[in-house]
Image (cartoon, rainbow, N blue to C red):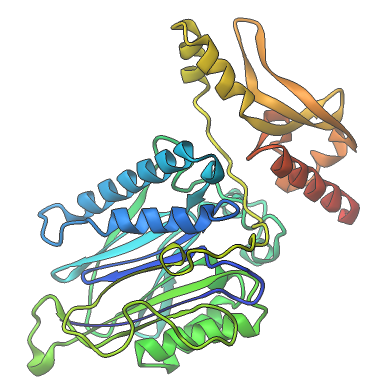
Length: 400
């Protein structure tokens, strides 16, 4: 089966940095959407894609190898963040596709997506690991409400957050005429699935389709970085069904709104489609801080491990870790910012109120996005916790 590929990443209309990245290395394709403040997002997506690129092309258990590489990418992102104070708290989504014979294996963490266009029908293959998607699954929101929800970018799972990460995986048969789309939420947050479907149907060239998707997302506001990879599967010339024949492809990276295309690896068609495109590798030296992303880590912190550390005699290390943690919770009926972790060890509280607010917790708990307030909403430091409080205040003011 012959493969044709188009890809593009774009900074969008509102960002100073491109924290997205993509990988096109047949039979492996992926997109990543990094986050984490100045430089962090760029580095996270780049580290994850570079780790993923080490996937062996030949493997009997290719899906298992893909999942293992994503878990290794998680470890590398986490270790890099812990080793550099400027990168602490960074993370990334990762959605990857690898083909093997007449099958496609998809593995996924975060809210970047994979779609399949087949016989005129567009199907979303992945489920977002986000707060609003969980609320949709629980019947608390409709998909339409989720698409407009102010907390739609709060993730429940991503690489670089915890030592272990759950990876969604699936395998599907490939048919001639199939088109697969990998994309970050900079696309799906700007244009609806019906319009994505129309573009994928109407633009038969994968690069033209990639370009038009990005242009439409920018035309709708371009609130975030936008990355798409379009992969077409066709009968090989003469009807042969061999695996791995790769047609020409073009990959583009737009560095800023209106700038000429400047893609590493773009240009003339090549016999092998190979390229790792990420913001970190092409925008080094950028000084401006990006606009803060509306994402927060919902860390599933391993409290038991901390307690075990204290018991084992690592009191100083345990205390240092606890002091580095922040969350928003409830204190004396009001929303408050805590330093530490929301639990206790043998009657000893492992957190304390750092800042109080005048926000009544009872009213906040009636708002669906904040019903986990009593358990604690994890933040990446005091500044991030204050942003959470500000968002709660805005939601409370807008509530009927």
